[in-house]
Image (cartoon, rainbow, N blue to C red; front, side):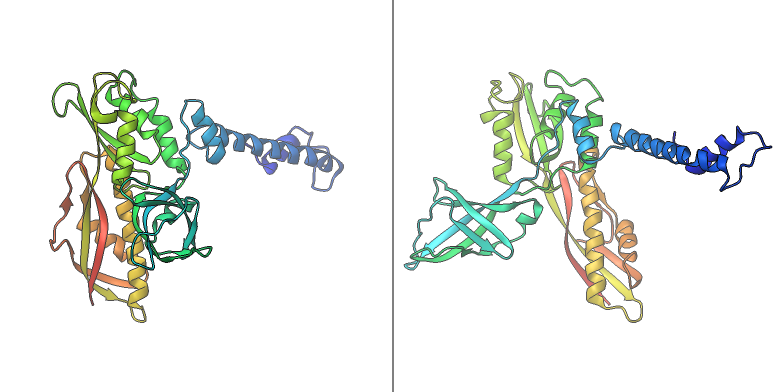
Length: 356
């Protein structure tokens, strides 16, 4: 659509009789140049507006507003929650008020409430996956009389980053494919993937007899959801699996919500390095690249019948790391062949063993 300043000037000058002085600096040239510059800017703005208008090229807030026209909202970042333990000087449980704040490393945590089983629930004050990183001993921001030990013991619900443009774009275009109604597969996929902390879902209709449905979930961070997250989703979809229509599932659909299973892949390889390369730095680069490869695999899980972790891809990915000369004898979990996962399994990177 757009035309450059040079193209516009050429068009304008071509309409002037050649008997006239049209050289740069002439009266005619100087009269046309400002108009051509403004028109070129206008064309550039139109091109930018076109990019921002349509869902296949829009980003950020523009994509958010376009998706909302279809009733699709970008998922917000969420805060991680944890189970914590507080002990007094006598070694017994110590009472801590809701709202009490602690810190671990660079993150701050707030006590939300105490569950019936006695465990305290704390929330990381920083939203996003970064809040999932640490477990360990907490330090209080204020002095708490009698408190001897505070420990962040277990991740309860994952913190998730705000939904990315590509994930939102995919949900937007998926909404046009197939008619979603009455609890068909398209209906379940559209409604469940719109829920917070859901990255993808596989729908298994009539999986345990007539009227039963099984939903297998991968979370928004492309990992296995926690038990608390699965229970929360179960309550939203079909509380107590009765099929009575109290959730988003239609009446008569007894729905079971399950999590994907993670398969830990331990990698071993013989590594040849270039002269001067430092193995620790090279291994850090290799791990990052392999983590990216495994993450891309997990993002494909929803659309794949099953996932395959290929030896050739692992070797090719590791070879891209700076300082790597050659890789041989690559194995996954002690085997020198590809790992073919089951339909409801996703791969995660385990240990990387290296023989120089």
